[in-house]
Image (cartoon, rainbow, N blue to C red; front, top):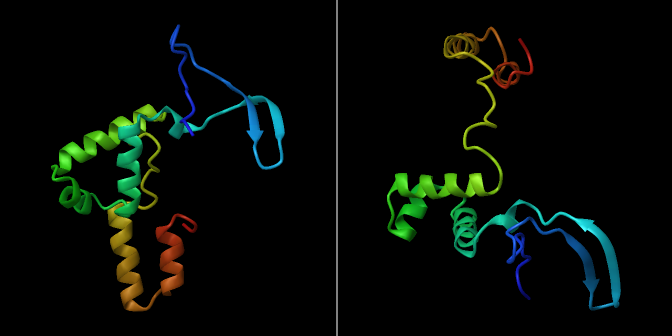
Length: 128
């Protein structure tokens, strides 16, 4: 099998998948289908993503396996994020609790004024 093309080789426009076929039951489905974000990655980028998953997202393990520095691996990861249509760091949630409030919650927990469950809810932003 060949990977799905996402770009027209003639005009470089975006291609749309319009037909799917099942060789097991000879069913053909026609329509407009999206290929998904991973379809826009190069074979090298897909290999990097596979290694990233295999290393459980631990960049230090990737450094050892690839023999590359942390900044190089991080840059490659950012290239992949951009290729998938995102901007690195843009979707990160704002910190739910300030550092000062976090310290106060931990002090309250240590002093027994709140339970561990209450502390977890507050720290996750579920409770003020």
